[in-house]
Image (cartoon, rainbow, N blue to C red; front, top):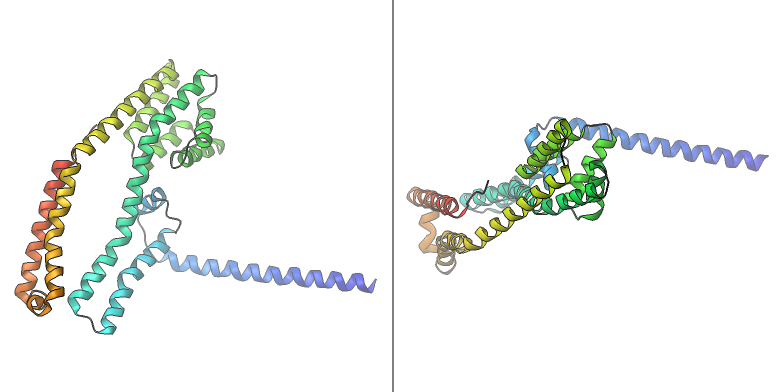
Length: 288
């Protein structure tokens, strides 16, 4: 009996210790949440992080963003670097996080648009085989790779939780900013109201989407030379300045230490930006 009582007490002590540890961890999480609540983040930025697949919370990402922007600058100031160099590094480090999020978001949206035509073929074939539209979405989540599998899987989970099909598809369309998906959603809504052969309609939409992707890739190939030329023209002045600064720093120092030099750098950067915008406007053709 004594051994049983001792074992029981030890088990209870271990349970209380584990409970105490869990309560302490929960309290730490609450404290972190209170700190993060002080950081205000827009809803659009939160959506961009979700679409980009960033695992950090928006508040955590903003804190990381601020740290990445200012910590290198503080170190350079402490080590005695020139103020202009420090400001350039701060500016570059501050631009890296939003550019990374935007790049990831655009990459995911582009890949989603390319996969959408194949997904619509699966939906059409599933409907012809006797499956429901909801079951066809589950087939897409199982058979296709990400990002379209995870996005349609989320739609399927929302349907299981009681959300309507129209709301889930419209929410997905807003998230991915896909006009082709909006066309599919409108087709589904109209078909539910007035009827019709949904499988044939979706098959026609998938053919249209595939043709559009082919045209976009063709235009991208034809305008590749213009984009590369723009990048080369933009990098030549920067490369020349860096090269001369390395081989003859004293010759270039007035450009970085005098008011006239700052003015020339500002004018040159402004003209570079205008040139890049013009080239981008010429080579980027929109297909609606």
